[in-house]
Length: 322
Image 1 (cartoon, one colour):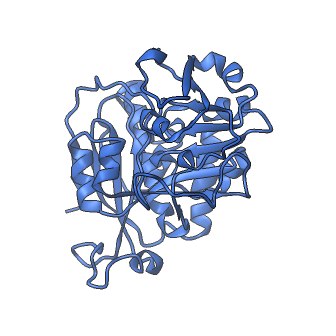
Image 2 (cartoon, one colour):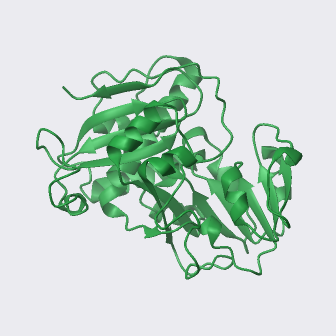
Image 3 (tube, helix red, strand yellow):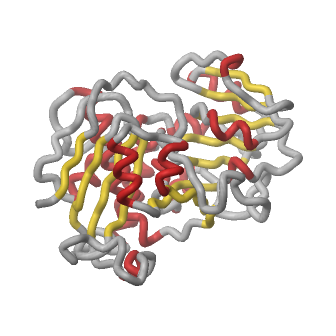
């Protein structure tokens, strides 16, 4: 389903002429995240820049729109000479050659970040964090991915974490009244049974597992696909079963680029200038969309917080157009 969702995203963006006049400005590969910057003439993106033209490409070719994605472990793909069409194909596992499965996974993440960048003019994010907006009557929450910073936003709730890598619940810091239990991917249906809200990390778009997670969610649960990797036009995710898509918008491209280059993820990217936002298909149960905004400040965000393998051993790589 990840491929089906991403193909629908790409096709939908083409129908909106999102590829027209857009070129690759810069790609930054950090140890934890990928940042793709595109330049193009879209006026809606231009309207989001400051009056002095901040955000425009240095050579005047148009405003820069930027997309993030979680980086899986693996070697850097060859970025020489790639264009927007090629990068979008990488999101579907097409076109990137060499380096084996790990390199293909990183190339896919670059492709996802490219689709997110192309989506920038076409998504009107509502500032806020659904993880901070749980309704008081929510008793059980499942998360696909270990969102450690988010747990401090919960109150009197049972959290069931589905994670690829073993996690010791005792090592996860939580506020009073919040309990954590952990499950493997093959136990997702058990973990999600009778839950009120299911949060699925958007990085499943890059490394797989989205279809299994959406299929395992109870029909009565509100499903939120969340994280910087999910910062795409939301329609295909809604059609796949998500009720809310919570992504990220890059407010300060220069600062975020530097943070990605330095290996930042999660909170550090939020601090660098990434805005948290969401879009809902309808009024969901279990989340109060009219409630208080994120306690970390209005318009704040974190990129995907799922546990990752830090042993990539690769320094940040950056390529930009001449």
